[in-house]
Length: 377
Image 1 (tube, rainbow, N blue to C red):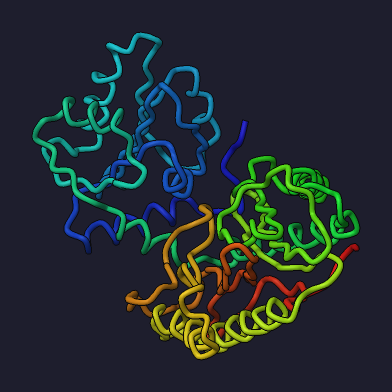
Image 2: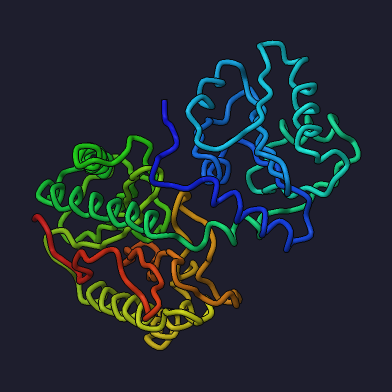
């Protein structure tokens, strides 16, 4: 059973939440099972048919509403909580939630939720448990808390990058004509686990060859690699709930002139974005730096996604490195830089690194070679 790690001060995180709630003119936050609840409590709950609700107010201990069978997870916490456990009868769920709302002093109050995560199940229960609640989006509050990673979090992410890189390095000798995308993805997963990744991967590895590599979010198929294919591998590891997310592009047996050209353009775009990033720089300017390189080379229409996304206890979180996002980077922010070019019917190239903003500039957790490498035959 996962327990909160002793390396994290959850009481401090909860204090920071209180300050952020007050600044946002909210009375509290309601969370269901998910990354933000784990971030604030260290408690791990899977989404299931049984609701879990965490209630955080300005002046009361956190309130946890949960199934009786999960109550043991609260036994070794180093901070105070109030808990309301219910049995197997669904008719008791709403009563327990009502008791939790009252204990948190949130009845009739203005409460933030995460619209992207909060389920209809919990939404219906909380609304009917207290019809006077005012539920609004609390995503900005939680993003503000989670965007800036402390040294412990950065260390977990660095280890996740190290494991991911080592796993791919061990898998590269398996790449040759005739192996399928699905087989290669399976070997990479085994290597990730063998090198120390937690079993719950940030996502299933993307292994996309030939024309499939022109699809940024391709899923491994039974297509067999053949000479001349471009090969995109997008993969990551999990260390203590913190993720890595990397992409490197290879060529199988050889590469044609056009694909060699776009590989260099994407590398130049990656370098430009990493060079631009630093404290105080708006997120949109990182995207613009990468996009300018690709557009100047005549491939702008084939760069079809943002330059990056925040990374941490979720594979995609704030800050989003996209045009139109004026949020200034601050030390401790962690995100990806992943420009790409995708030519339909031919193939694609993406180079993705995991980075952190420092007081002086930018540090890349990942250092695996970014240049196009020809493998197998």
